[in-house]
Image 1: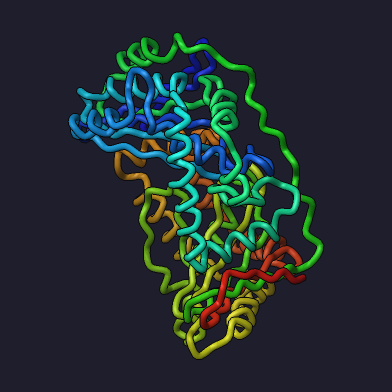
Image 2: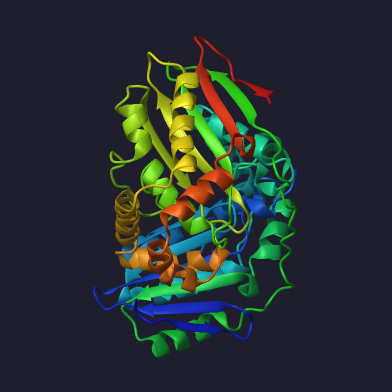
Length: 433
């Protein structure tokens, strides 16, 4: 791993720089410590909506000028809102990176939130939400999330609840923006073709004059332990039955998180923590062999998320047209019980870890990915979490995998969700225990 430059400016902005001289590019990311975790009923979806408004311009960079400026300089940009964070990035030719510095420093403080733009974006986001509701897996996942989290604000989807999207006003969004969009609640991460000392001076010119804000609130409402299996059934249009099992899982900084990733690679195939990474085949995984080769499911995959607070380890299967969800659940339970009763062999675990290592490496190749990891790891831990990833994965033992299977993959620690297709069905959800 190349060394990085780490510095906190006088206004609290954490700066992380990584020189990579393989191509004349720089990737520039600003991460804010705000996501759906920081929302409550009444303003769910605010973080995602604020992200949209950041593309609507400032007095210096009016809406529309941003896209043209980035495209003219041969770059690309985007943004993401998630459970714990919101991030914005630009990847540009190295000699054009001042545009990204100027742009993000400007919209950290000066986004306009024009009432007409807010109204227009309300329509866009509600339409996005309604489009999601046409996807069986979105509807199923939303019901599972709501059932899994009764107290913690991981309860709601990032896009927010329709009731809040219809009622939030411009001032609600602007207040959210001003509370969380401050240098002392942000991380600036750059990777690419630059000299760190020179880049730091340019960063100071653009960012250090921005005033710090009051400490951003991140109220925690810990989810109490689940005391029994919960089940939800969603009925809707289509001809495919979907199944999801969601187990309460440890946070990214918990020592059990790495053994869980090894277990996931062995059970369902390696999952990708890098949102910009690509997947690899899971055909050697236990659940693929039991479900897909056993003609119980058309596909199966799993994954855990790196989060601040304990979240979910999820297994998703598309049920074979001639089979029932209950048969798939029984088969999954058999595979989990095997792991709980007998640790995997050293060879099987070594193969699963090798696949997870490969996926991690593939997701760290490009300059944009390198810059992603610089900031992403800081959202729930620190960059050292990333640099020590492979070392911690390598020391996971068969006994560790067995232990996390016994600890977390228990029926009373999960929510099972089934999407049942109905001819001419209207949206509907049933809750059961």
